[in-house]
Amino acid sequence: MKTPSIIIADDHPLILKGLEDFLKERHYNVLDSAKNGKQAYQLIEDLQPDIAILDIQMPYLTGLQIAEKCKNNEFNTKIIIITFEKDESIYNQAKSLGIYGYVLKEFALTEIENCIASILENTSYFSPELLSHLEKEQVPEELKLLTPTEKEVLKLTAKNKTAKEIGDILFVSNRTIEKHKSNISKKLKLECKHTSLALFAKEIEPYLE
Amino acid sequence: MKTPSIIIADDHPLILKGLEDFLKERHYNVLDSAKNGKQAYQLIEDLQPDIAILDIQMPYLTGLQIAEKCKNNEFNTKIIIITFEKDESIYNQAKSLGIYGYVLKEFALTEIENCIASILENTSYFSPELLSHLEKEQVPEELKLLTPTEKEVLKLTAKNKTAKEIGDILFVSNRTIEKHKSNISKKLKLECKHTSLALFAKEIEPYLE
DNA sequence: CAAACAATACGTAGAACTACGTATTTTTAC
DNA sequence: GTAAAAATACGTAGTTCTACGTATTGTTTG
Image: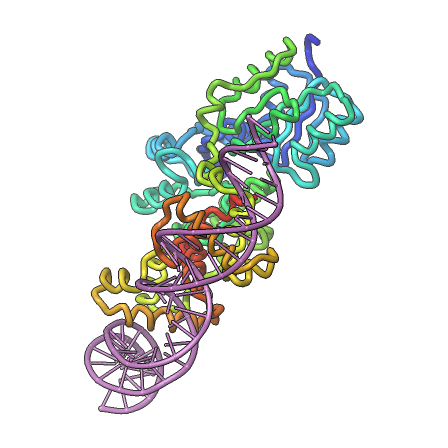
């Protein structure tokens, strides 16, 4: 693989143009480009390029969904993700799909070249800068202390259910729910106030599955 | 002004390249480019271009801060904002700073040309698409019903303060705070539960100034 | 098969919030 | 300058949440 064939995809016209121009200037073999996920997957299927450089957020199919389909179909196309996403969980998800590179859009263009160069040697590339730019998932530390039932109680508490209502939903006594709440507060060392648990529940609601 | 002089600025290399290439291909007179706000302002000051095309989110100075400084210094440079920001409030802020165009990065490249063409005729340009893409600020409807003190009470309630504590902070009786809470609940027709107000407060906390 | 953990449930007491009032003073607005 | 709105404060009663217990029954897991 001397001059790898490449397809690219991004739904932002400016970025797609920037990427395409850059690659062509450097004499890469850009077969075609797509402006959404469906088009991109079609290109991969039809052209079987060596490399696909994909955005994550795209209409119809995300870059990760494309990576998954390629993996399932055992395509040989190697995938580089170029994205704004700094979420560590998304990065981990990408890695588990066997992608060959993960480049943040704020990185210099040379990072893209580094990445392609690595792939020519059949090794994946993750910028040393990357790890310091990723944003760690916070909060879950506290949630790990809680049992599934306790999380369920939190979830319903965040939805403004009383202990009685939660008990009815889970077919247990309101006293049991009160005990769960008490245990949660103790574990997490919440303030001894009426609304502490509800406010905490509301705060971490997004992280409760 | 036949061939306007232009400077551009964006902290994302890919976008900066896309924009610069595009403009040069179309034979615009691109004097220079900057990759952060400070550089961009320097360019405007030094080169006094006819047009500056700026991103909002940039290190050191945002595009809006640059627009403000240009306005205060009575520079003649006309400003076009190119951004991801769909917040209506940011759009309104931009408009009040007298910018000549507001283009979303997801828009086609021709929108940029339309914008420049309008400026050549000394009129501002806002894409008809724009309004449907902007995300309205929601919620405030309910908040408009509340008095300043009531909002203050909500703010402190969201921070898990009791009526007594809020009273101490605002130098009034806890009974007064309870009355405020009661009035809020009545106005907003909240459920008659202990945690309703706290959870509501937490929900709209971001909109309380 | 124990020991640890999780889930279940109750007793009692107190604190905070809620609802429904009334009522006075201050501020805002026409 | 008066009427409306907002802010102040209290009474009473009822509900819910919390804290501090105790205690039984399952479920994991080494």
